[in-house]
Image 1 (tube, rainbow, N blue to C red):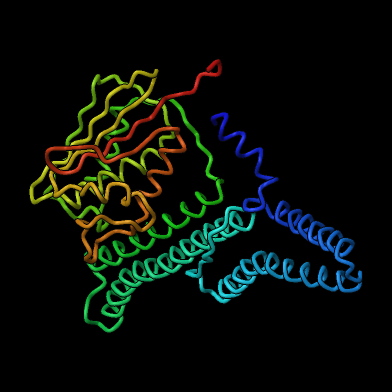
Image 2 (cartoon, rainbow, N blue to C red; image 1 turned 180 degrees about the horizontal axis):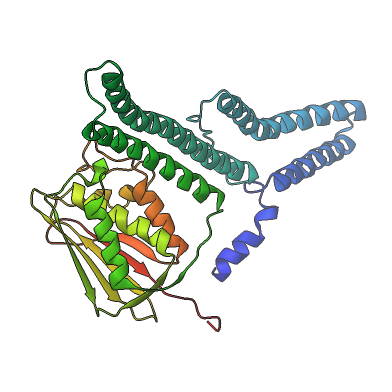
Length: 353
């Protein structure tokens, strides 16, 4: 802060346009000054003191009314806006241009109203999205079971696998919501340890190939693993990292073209046991304007599928949180083709740092 700015800030308590206290002090000074001036005039003009007293009181009342209206008006507007907010109208804002404490109060109120409006909007979106995501697998599971009960379908392994897929989809959504709840409460511990990257990522891709849930229905997509050097060692909570990598691979598979290729790369970073992971697909990619939004809760890019397998919109939000918990970062990187997601993990934190 410059010397001029510091001096301007120091003079604020004495500026009636930037301080309510200064405005009230100015009101008292002006009232006393007017009264003193009228008494002085009375002594030199032979006017009775009663008349002077009446004029002094009237002048003080008018001045007090003028200043009081300027102070009470914004408070009345704040009261009306607060009552509207109590009724659920979070779009209400106060509009008065002041530089004093009341102006700061109005700015703070508007900021709070904007935050509450965003929270209310997210709550409604949460209910709508969860209801939509639950309705689809529940309806499919109900249809399968009704067909079995009514004798339309036999309880053969294929029918049971269909029911199992819908149950797994429900289980995945519930698990995402539970993770989201733990995320908000900050109660998820981090159990990080060193691990060999090649066998670990190989098992993740093997699970992706053998999984039977709807997210893995694309059997035509080839999964490729590239770890360099092969003996690379990382440091992370392997369960949390498995969720991150699985989610990125799932998304890459879902957005790949027919007979496409998804590549999972792992490289070491400059830090000991630091790790850089990349998941590259050959799909349409993510527009630059959506690259931050896809990590929001229930956020989807414009290219995301909106059919029966559009996902919950929670996976990337939880993945970003898990990476942040490690002290790392996740982003959508530039790529000439498809989408390239990059995850960086810093490795263990040295105690002497």
